[in-house]
Length: 368
View 1: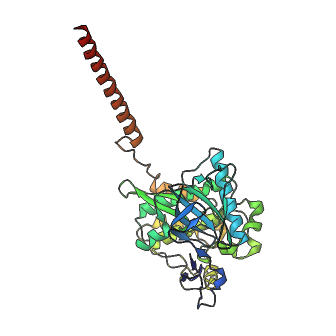
View 2 (view 1 turned 30 degrees about the horizontal axis):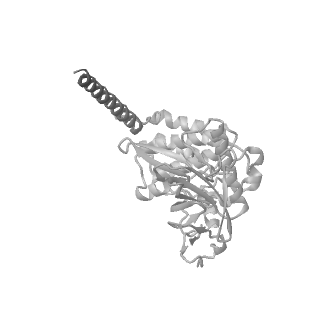
View 3 (view 1 turned 180 degrees about the vertical axis):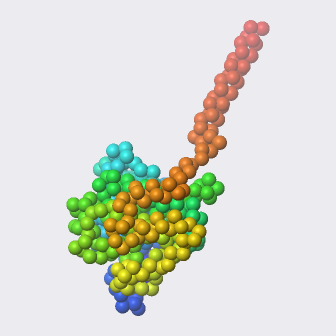
């Protein structure tokens, strides 16, 4: 177990973190589990990404590979994770599972998601709240951008169409996200690295408009990805344009190859100031992909009234330029299950033929 600062990302292997930055109080630094550590019957493989409200781990449970999401200490983080798990439970039980959202698993070996959407575990004096979901291949979009800051424009378009579709699904269920950023998406490529597939593994504030003021808290999302209207508590209103802004910031970053607002080695106060004053990095893609750049520029407009007024409008603008995201190609080879069934059937037929021949020869010997 190690301690990690959520602000400056310093790490202490002995859980005795001291941060030299005055804006990084050490008490805000959660403990992160390492390879081989156990949480009940769940074994940690590795941390995948550390968010401000939770940690996503790759883990094993009952000898199966899974994803484990554990909330950081604090009532707000705990309640946010519980709402997320309950939402995933609801869509799964109602047979409304979305292709871009996690498939929830029972938190314990002897229960079901209908009974328990999330679990609790005591570890070294801390009561941790967690939930598990099916493992899929992929890496955080943030890590992908570290390796390749500027993706192919078609990859950007297809990725943002998928992400916009996932956020639109939340809206269709009466919920808002309000924390969209490159940190909350897993990405993998299929069809010989030609098409990105996503998993939205963090659902943000995931609450309806009536409870938004009660559940929204600023620290849950990095300041560089916070909409201007969320900086003033009097202006927090339930509206899709705030999520349009988050989608726009992510797309803007994909286009220019760096975060829309610089945040590395800066305090939250400094970043909030940049957001309020709209000190964005320059959009440098007007010459080569002007139409796409203009979609991003409209989405990140400081005035909410000037943005696309719904996430579906944002995705339709992209779809008009890039077309639909190509569907996964079916393999020409049958699945392993089909192969095993065919092999089993052939073996059974061979056995019956052999048995029939043996019986026939045996009958002939008796007759002679």
